[in-house]
Image (cartoon, rainbow, N blue to C red):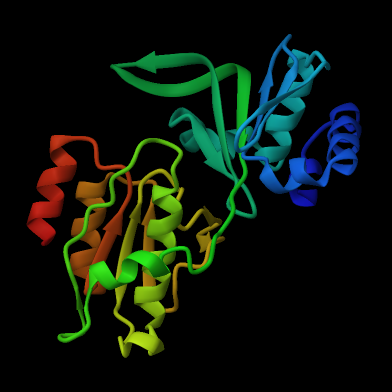
Length: 247
């Protein structure tokens, strides 16, 4: 948590540090830190929310955002227009405020009033229980697979670890590593920071981020010749068509 706490102004830093020191379970189970102007801080844990009675000011939200953007909000403008940015360590910061729209497209996000810091955690080997259903070990191949579950149940975490295992190879199953291509449209799989994956997605994995799945798959197929393509959050007809074309 130290790498996240450094982004906060001193008052909020001290409050959060004290909270984590009082109960180690909070530090281990925290999933999100919710910051809203003129509202208390909310720590979202696995099964409960913790309310911290400290009223956050607009100035503090701006200070936090500037640190997330390394004191150059303009440089992160495109990411902010998508409503989030990824910081060192793979943590994702969602944000809302006043959208500036031009020709039906968001060109700026100003007066940011809410921040949602989602804590990134890798769970290595969490895919072990399902690998046997995904792999055709006889032909050293992988079945076309769709992972489905309600929100917040770990789909992306399992997907990430599955990619890592397929990419690295699985000795115990006599499965050789395969070249993987990842279209990380929302930055939640590899969590790229300055082009470098912050999460371990395997030694044979190439990642393209911040692009639609349909365009990203085309680029990967043309340029990187992946044997396996993975993506997250299929939700449109365009996504489905892209998958059909790449299958």
